[in-house]
Length: 174
Image 1 (cartoon, rainbow, N blue to C red):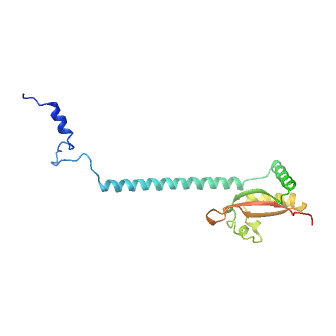
Image 2: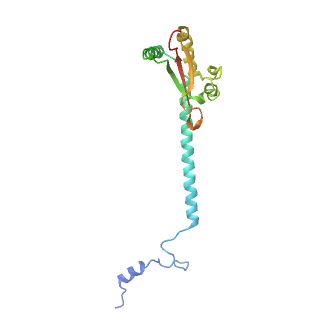
Image 3: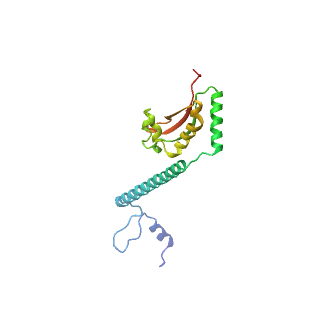
C-alpha cells in the first residue's frame, strides 16, 4: 500500500515535538523564558503603581472637594435652630457639651497642633468652614454663658485626625 496511514501522522504530531521549523532545530511545545517572566513582572508592577497613583489622585481630589464644600459652608436659620435644639437636648440629658461640627485636622492652618496641645489662640487656626460655628457661638451662645472648646477626636497612625468643635457649659451654676 503506497498511501500513508492518517493515524501515523497524528501520532507523529502528538509526540511532544512540533515539526522542525525552517531554522533547522526542533522547538519544544512548552518553554519558559526568564526575559518573558521579568518583562511580565515589570509590566505587572507598572500597572500596580499606576493603579495606586490613580487611587491616590482620586483621594486627593475627593479631599479637595470636601474641603472646598466645608470652606464654603454657611449657616442657615434651620442650622442655627438645629444646633440650639441639640444644646437644649444635651443639657436636659445632663450632658456638659455637644459637638457642633467635626472636620479633618489638616484643614486647620497648623494641622490641629494648637488644638491638640491646648494652646491659646487655637481658634485662629480654624478653617473658614469652622469659623462660621465660632461666630454662631460668639453671637448666640457665649452671651448666655456657654463655652467653646475643640479637641482632636481621632489619631490615625498616631497623628491628629478629626477635630470636634464643642459648645460647653458647667455642671452647675456656681
